[in-house]
Length: 437
Image 1 (cartoon, rainbow, N blue to C red):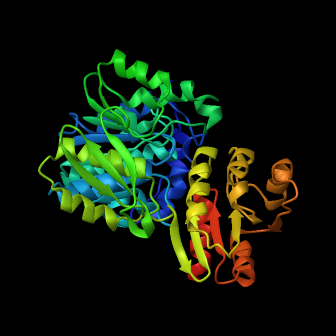
Image 2: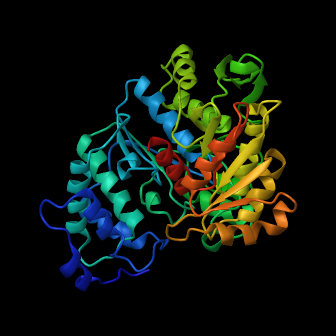
């Protein structure tokens, strides 16, 4: 795709000196005609203007359908524990844009982001960039300025044509491949797997974290002579009764002749295992006690996050059937024998809400549907219409907002009940905000 000209937008809307981060983010939303515009040409053009040479840092790219954020968070903390300075880039954010860009485990400041945005704006000229592309390049600017040792980069959508993929990784992780973003990536795992495998490079080390990789991923691995680690092949991930509450996992790699105990903390264990496999390649001097201690305390906002203890409120950003199936399994192990599970569900129009509800229906006793008043958000009425054939006799209660749905659920719930809020980053953000007020 050839660069597009937006000189009129630049002349009238560019934030001036002293502009706030919010003003810049509003500007970023206005300078490209599409929210998503996959392709690398425009990003590469601006990247070459920003950097005279490729970054000298070690680059780890994390792609996949679900579990990317958990893998990034775990690997970021493990690398820091090994004495490496790190930059981590993730998306989207829950409450504040700064969550997307971390240096040595801490969110960057508004001032740093504004300075990076100014540099990207100066470099792009008349080349249009999407909100995500602009932010990705700004993160690269900040990591380069900080001189960190490792860049841990989460792919935004797909892989092959995602803005993050303009950089060649030294190691790549694909967490999982399942159906999501059908209009952009395709409607089956083989086609989507080909897109996800686009982050691979000839001869690098890579990890496929989940079981049963699509043939399209393995074909790319073979074609590019990638050194692939995967569960059931080069390492084993088995349940153990040694974890908290009687649950836990053991990671075994024959090459080391030892075991790593992985906690059952609510983060996807396959993602945690992939992070451990990666760090043992990258930083073999990091000891097992340090790995196990760090992972035991690892949490991530919006990933099976406990927001309140009585009644228990848990929030999860799962928004596709694959994530919902994982969530349903977790709920089955968390629910009290005498309590109900009340689901608060809010979603975007382009998501497979029928598939999500179908995966969750066996774990839920009552449904509260909350409307999302955001771009692409479904109203509670629209969501109810789409779920009518799935929920059947489970008649949901409708609320204009997630906050109202949560307020009612808390009023109705007994101490043994479990309230699960899920379906979108917007859904979880709304619940977290409601509990803070």
